[in-house]
Length: 319
Image (cartoon, rainbow, N blue to C red; front, side, top):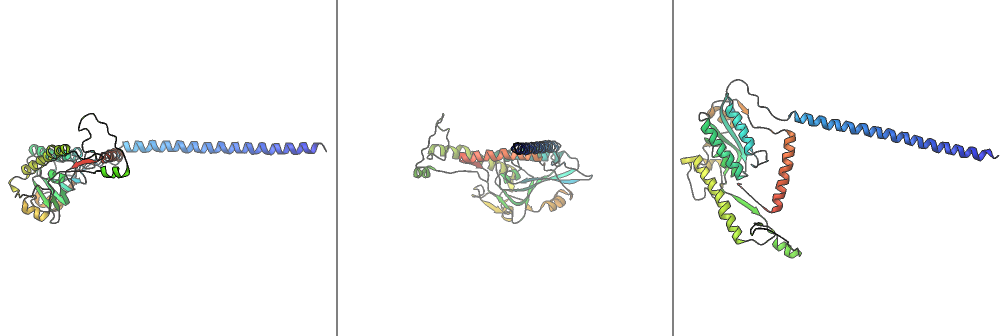
């Protein structure tokens, strides 16, 4: 009789011990599975990294035998760090003109504009290439829009071709900002701003507008850049321009009206210009393409920069 409780106790202890051991084994199995999965993920990341370093997404221009027309795309916003920037476009242009099979270059343009600095770099770069390769025509062909900074660049070309419904012009400079002073007063928000330098907080959107600072920006920045823009257009287009009081006011015109004003030369698209103007119907695109990893890191930096710029409250552009 006395052995029965002891037997029940030992049985219970064995059952508990078995459960503990089973749980321990299961935990070890789970740990091994997670360890294997983690190692596989690390190997996958390493493999993807090596694959990207091998540059699978860059486009190498392959040129077949015979003459061709080189095409360089200038599309979207023009800015340092954007898809269209001076360094990238000039890389494509230099590759195109140095290729012995290139009979002419088309700048295929579809942009509302952007950075005045990037536009000026490209204008100067195109003018220099024309001097170094005077026998090679460099022409611009406009798709939907070629305004502001885009037109700045196009004016450096030998000639500009458009569709009748294309939009061209907008020869002006813009700076935009916001003012939150009244909103802050209504919400009872106190602005605390410390600077070293009387005008360091230039056009701060949370402070009242200073007429002195406003005048400085207008006269010494916007007007100065505008004059440079106008001079570049006049130099590029020459006596083809039929200047009017509103030509440099920031207005835009259709392609047909642009022809009448001398802003552009004639109607045409990439294929008709390649065939009838340059004389090489075959088209080879020399626009450099970023690797995927470069595109991701660049766009992260650009997005952060634009966010900080927006937070600062102002920016100026040729658009």
